[in-house]
Amino acid sequence: MRVLISGGGTGGHVYPAIAIANAIKDKDPLVEILFVGAKGKLEMEKVPAAGYPIKGLWISGLQRKLTMRNLSFPLKLVSSLYRARKIIKDFQPDVAVGVGGYASGPILQMASMMKIPTLIQEQNSYPGITNKILAKKVNKICVAYDGMERFFPSDKITFTGNPVRRDLYDTPINREEAKASFGIKNDKKTVLIFGGSLGARQINESVEGAFDMIKRQSEINYIWQVGKMYFDEYSCGVVAALPNVTVLPFIERMDYAYAAADAVVCRAGALTISEIALINKPAVLVPSPHVAEDHQTKNAMALVSNNAALMVRDSEAKEQMISTILELLNDDKMQRNLVDNLKKMGRPNATSEIADVIFSLVK
Image (cartoon, rainbow, N blue to C red; front, side, top):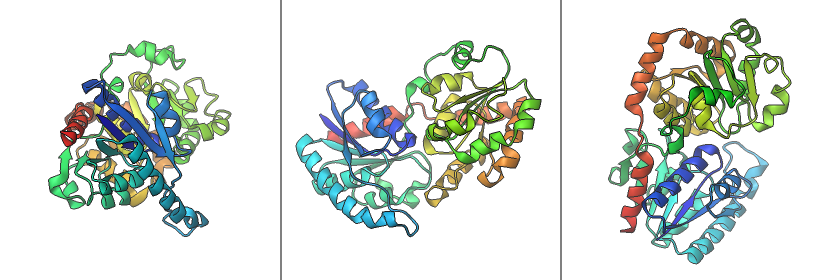
């Protein structure tokens, strides 16, 4: 059996794709898996590191505002469709899977035209334009939110939840060991702050702007992932110099970071939301306003409306983000309520269920 998995661009697409591949291998180690990503994107590094081969397409997104970058889009699309067809002919997959991201469009389009069974995994509560278009052509659609029949044919939908790496929530980790891995050698409460795999400037500026508050409440530890492109700027800032703050460009061991944390401040990407729902840590979500259809706010509201997380809008983060997480840390009852409601939303078997749908398409 051969499975083609396409998509990527950010960690929110890459890591779920790898999780799906691992689940397929768990069920049948003899399955051959080939990834297809966008040249120059995160997947071209992370997928080989996970032990899977990958081929790249010359493709990027269509910008929603007038820009010179859009002039090359038609050429990239034609080139990628041609390349996708050749990859499919050479690999001869039994099924093609799209997880979102630039590369999934050309691969799923060509696979459906070539009568290969196809599946897309929609991570968000509001789908992007690529998956809306592909929905008419694919055989199955795995979703993580209720009410997705507003966007997709109901007879194609399977509610599975989002794929999350099992090691993040299913492997017992000693909390002291986890904290020590970040240089924390005390038993004080710890806050994990991150803005996705690439970092987020607004979150970073909100931490930097709360210097006085963070310094005053020195009994709180902070693990602050700023992103590689922001590391030089913030690692030399006034907050980074505080003894209760650990600044990192990137966190390789998110399982250790989650285990060390008493509470989390983060964006509201689909993958992050799914992780939060499984690790059962109280969270303050700061949705990015710079994504299509404002889907991060919709993701966050799915938790907020169930009293499973708090939300601070990006525009209000500098004034409210740190004060909100500190208020949460000081309110044990609120923490328990958020965690109790989070537990009801977690889908620990999501990755395995998606793999089952993929196998069913081949059968």
